[in-house]
Length: 202
Image (cartoon, rainbow, N blue to C red; front, side, top):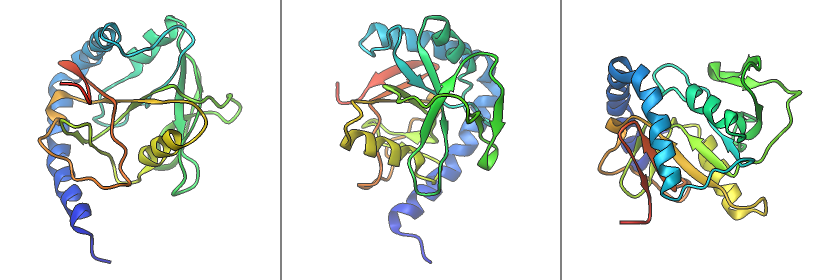
């Protein structure tokens, strides 16, 4: 089946930005993992609410994604309740299970590391979201599965309480425009190793 114009535009953008992200990870990956912690702290000072007891989900890094493990450990040490995503059936939103330092993770589909099934399910108030590209309006290019988009759209339409979506990426993953439609969920914040931005503000 032929791709739609938006899907084809996303595919081409993904090809370009993957190479850019790989280079950034190779050149700056280790230091960026520390810098992202500093930028998250500055974003919290500027209004991103993550208090003791807040439930925050993050991704367990794969390949050339910006490494969030140091950030997760730091949040846990502050008393933040941390969670990792769990993929359910195809075309379903994500669920989230408790994560604590030292927990053994299980390998799931696509090589994703997930908490074991005996860990409690949590409902994140803040979601740290991986991405391939993001534009100045908070439009996010993901990996094509739509898991985060479905999860965020369902949360924003449901009764589980508000959720704040925070993109985490290398600064070079910022682009002028990300193709999008009604099935794509915008981010509320972006944090890179070089800075942060709250969308919807100048």
